[in-house]
Figure 1: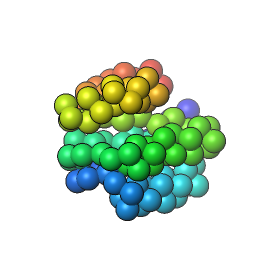
Figure 2 (figure 1 turned 135 degrees about the vertical axis):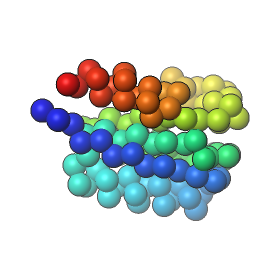
Figure 3 (figure 1 turned 120 degrees about the vertical axis):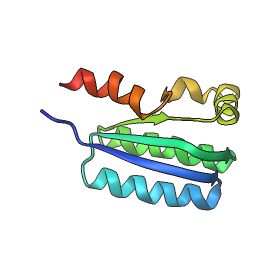
Figure 4 (figure 1 turned 120 degrees about the horizontal axis):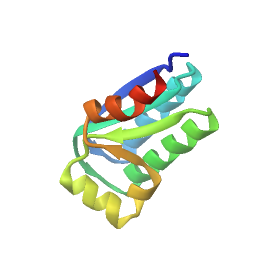
Length: 109
């Protein structure tokens, strides 16, 4: 069975406004029945607390829909924030889309 993977590329600053957009986007993606959602954050420069909240909401939406959510391509600054807030324990984070494809998708085939 082939899993459906949706890649969402985020950019700029993940704050309250962008976080609400993210929630809506993830909700729509889950409604369409995606098995896996990959958030590519290579263009994200900064995340504030409401942005972190939106990521946690996205993770919960994915779980409720029996989907999986992964993150890839985070900057050093975002990685530091994830480590400080222990978010790196909640999310499975890949170096980039290639590593995600190798580790996650290779197991599905």
